[in-house]
Every structure is written in C-alpha cells, then in structure tokens.
Length: 243
Image (tube, rainbow, N blue to C red):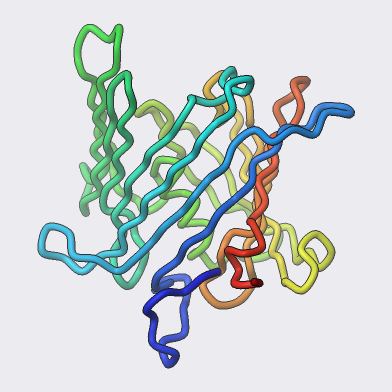
C-alpha cells in the first residue's frame, strides 16, 4: 500500500485509512486458460464534500474486449465515505450508456438509489432503510474492510445490484498465511443466494482476502463463475510499497 502525504505518526486504520493507491491485476481462469482480463486502480484520499470531511474514492477498471460478456468495457466509480468511520455517503457510476448513484442518510428512508440507462423508458429510483448493512458493491467492499467479524459467524448483508437488494452473508473463514507470503491474510466469503455480482448474474460467491493489520487493505479476490471459469484479482506488489 502506498501512503502519500500521511504523517508518520498517523497509523492507518480500517476506519481512517489515509491516502491509498492500489492497483490490481484481474485474470480469468478456465482449465488451461490463464489470461489477463482487466486492470483495476483504487485511489483514496482525505477530502471535503458538501462541507463535510470525507474520504473520496475513485475506481477505474479497464476490461479486455474478450471478457465483456461478464463485465462492462470500463468502469469509473466515485465514492464518498465518512472520515473517520468509512461509512458510505455517496456512490456514483457514470458510463457511456447512462448513470447511477446512491446516497446514504440516516433513518428509515436512508438509502436512496437512482439510475437511468439507454432503453429505459424513465429513470428508476429505490429507497430502503439504512441499517448499515444495505449497500452497493463498492461500499460493501469497504464494509468488509472495517467490520470486525467473529470467525465462523456469518454477518447478514443486502447487496444493491441494479437498485434492488439481494440477501447475502459474509463469513470470516480464518487466516491464510500461504496465499500472500509475508501477510496475514484474513479470508472472507460473501455468499449471495439470489443472483451473482457479475453483469450476466454469475458470481454468487466472492472470496476476499484482507490484510489483518493496519487499514486492512484488500489483497485479492476470487469469484467462481459456475461452469464458465473463475475471475481472480490480486494486488500488484508495487501498490504495497515493495519497490
């Protein structure tokens, strides 16, 4: 993890990670096939948004053309989180075919999701109670970094995909010392019973490895696609400062 501009005395934590730049290589595995599918870049920094001190996150994912059955050709996502705390405030995802956003406030009507894309007759909007466990996938990723799981005890969540909530659980399955040598990688498993996270509905299970210490940076992900192979993301070593 590359920390830029963070004073040495400020130790990054899951609730206050500081400045981060992380890069991931995404690969597609199917039998003997092991091909690079995409590159993903995550940039976070302290910021001010609507008069509040926040952490701003920008994500860029560039997908190789052959893999656009599962993924869009490019993702550009922006998010705002409380600072400290890393609770979601705002999510925005533009594309060449439209846009979608999600705003989080407190209360029974605290998750507001809106979207409008080509071929839709009118914009769609959805509102749900903000229970702290209902969110889109970007915010869920940082929930998985900040939440203190009990090993083996499932944590119930709802993932917003296309504005609709799908029930799931996240379970800490233990610490893996072999997958990422030199790191105590805590293995978490997200299970969705109704649909998967990919564009075609596959990807009902997501295995995620987070660093056990510091800001609990995500080291990698593993997404089985049923009979169509597996998508794997691993952090690029330079993003950990190993130059």
